[in-house]
Amino acid sequence: MESYGEVVESVLVKLWDVLHDLEVIIPQRDDYFRVSIFGSSRVKKGDKIYEDVRFLAKKLAIMGCDIVTGGGPGLMEAANLGAKDGNIRGVVKSYGLPIELPIGEGKNPYLDRSTPHKSFFSRLHHFVFLSSAFVAMPGGIGTLLELVTIWQLLQVKKLKNRPLILVGDIWKEMLKWMEEEMVKGGFVSKEDLKLPVIVSKVEEAIPPIEKALKDFQSNLRRIV
Image 1 (tube, rainbow, N blue to C red):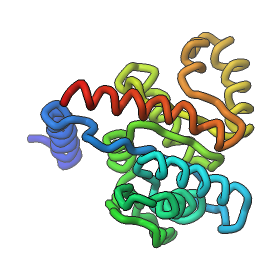
Image 2: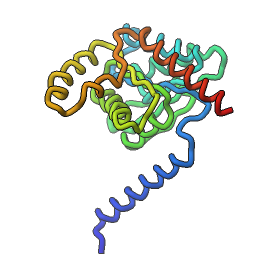
Image 3: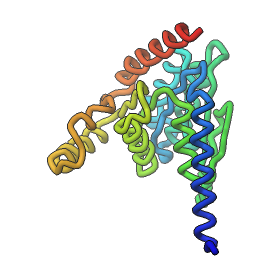
């Protein structure tokens, strides 16, 4: 007879299999180009980086991109507010995927659609399912978890043609460490480190997203 733990594990595996089957029959992306923006929840409104992210999200919204965030405060709030600023045609959606935490982070007030998650695993999967491009701003462990998840999916080709853009010197230092320790140690290849686009300023994140958006729209026209 199976133990309680074995039964729970078996059920979880079956649920993951069902999720995979749903992905096979449901298109991963629809007619909407969405950009996930990751970043620190600890930044305050009025900080330069807050205003930078708000500016970026506004520019992307004007281009017609939906904006997806973790739905919380800080840079997530800045991105959702920027989506509102740039929604001049009334067609852009501001998404939030808030996580239920004991610290009670709460969701920001600039969301058109909010889907709460009880686990980081389902939330990460939802980011991947929704988004056509990803931008990682400076942040902490949560931001690192999000960008590394996308990075690995690109590495193993589970994701294709979806740009991952890292903004800020914080990521340049991380890449330097990875090259010195992981590449030289033979744990990753130099090509793996070229998967994300590294930029210094938010303005530099716009061109690769613009290119991906044009490719996305071109593919849609061919399908139609």
